[in-house]
Image (cartoon, rainbow, N blue to C red; front, side, top):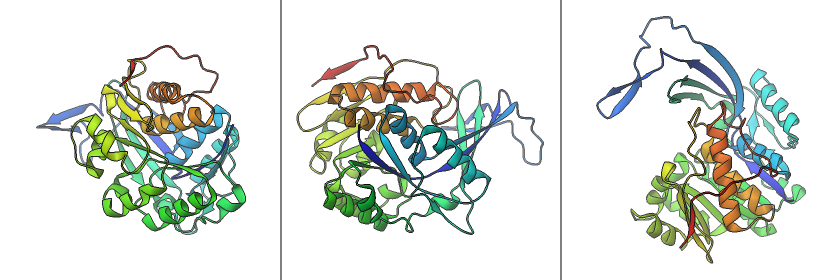
Length: 320
């Protein structure tokens, strides 16, 4: 097994779940939660308190697979922060390098979920997860990880660069799943890709980094920057290549989506968990797809995360 640092956000997720008041209503090409009126009181069926965020979700995948995992994220000393640390302790995740920010609350998402359709709207107060500049890249010298797994740092390119350079200088491999704020800074982002060993993006994000409309052309153009690239395309599956093999894959299983929160985190971290655990490129893609499918079938961003012992059935995957 490997030693992995997960660098990203840690949030408390509060689900407000209802079967009729949060039904999506179409307005043109858009949809809103149409039965919630301004000034009204709405009875919600139930509330569920969960923990999420890209850093936490990924760390749980690595821990359940059996890797040694260290989380680097920011929280606060409040009830939300306590909820995060309880989950980390339960999952066996090292929280020694958590940052605690004063005058900030732990990041919190309120998720409005329609229990019939699985559609949701997320209201997020980033709080302590809004910033990452206090986290020290020199801690990697003490940790000596095999891998650095990075989700969005809310566009903090300076911190990204510090961590990438430090990891690269140590021979630590890097897997990166950029977010919206990083994709708003394409020139800086592409400069940082020279440090990255595995890049994980969806089709829309790939098309923001390089020109192209087809998955194959996006893959080959991104491989000018990073050897191993994974591009997901929702229900259409995706494509992945590592410089030696290229695979076109579908979804693992056509399950009813109960809650899509955390699907991307489950896929990316699932791939690295399996790859760092010794599985082949093809097998790691299958585990990633299965992990993502298992997560969306459960409430919360990480309840359904798989362990390495799970028995996997065949799925649509073709070598190109």
